[in-house]
Length: 241
Image (cartoon, rainbow, N blue to C red; front, top):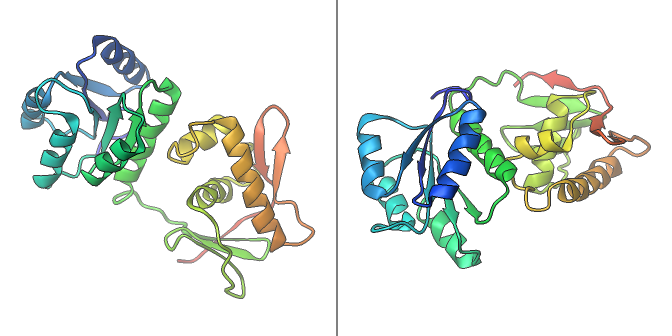
């Protein structure tokens, strides 16, 4: 698997304006990009190269994106697939994911959101080989286990978090006493909060605060840094796996 700065992305898109927009943005961010106009052109690229990510439009001439996605997965391919579509119907999203797409983004999309999702998918794909020496952390009488995706008290009592809340807390405990901007949090949390950006992040952090501070009475663990972002103020200790 390539590093983020030399990852190869194949963009399967027949709209020239979108092609140019996405390709130029990804190249500026340090990615290598191959463009394919159809499923047949994608097959030609795959015959000679192993991409790190495929960005696949749903509406294509000839074979559509759903069929291409299903075919790639039937072959046993594990390359991450980000599907693009002009259809905002939730049914289309569900079908795309059922066909094997890893993520789904409706047009028109914000370029920053697309970039966040690309980076998140590449991180997830690298997760099977990346070494993660510190997977359990302790802070303020709580223990977070990243592999088990579990937050609990030191006595073992679980504290229920949503996926978005857990991912935010992971960002904080891995970077304690460091100001994290909303853009950084958006990037590190797989783009799940991209639709409303800052406001959604603020709301999720508010819910996270209430849950962890209910278990640590009298302590403020996440501080707001005006015009900058958020700071996890409590010291964090790595625990043996």
